[in-house]
Length: 68
Figure (cartoon, one colour):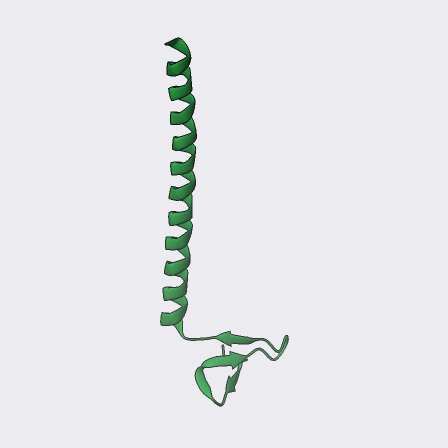
């Protein structure tokens, strides 16, 4: 990380000399962001699974109604 150029107004940010991109170099914030992303992905996956379960339940109910 020594290749990065510090940003004057924020010590948690640095500029990449190759691309000019501003990046976050605060490891705690990076870990927190990754944890939040993983939690959001898990929540989205759970929601998709619940939607699929509802579809399957509806299909089963329709089969039951047809047999009555």
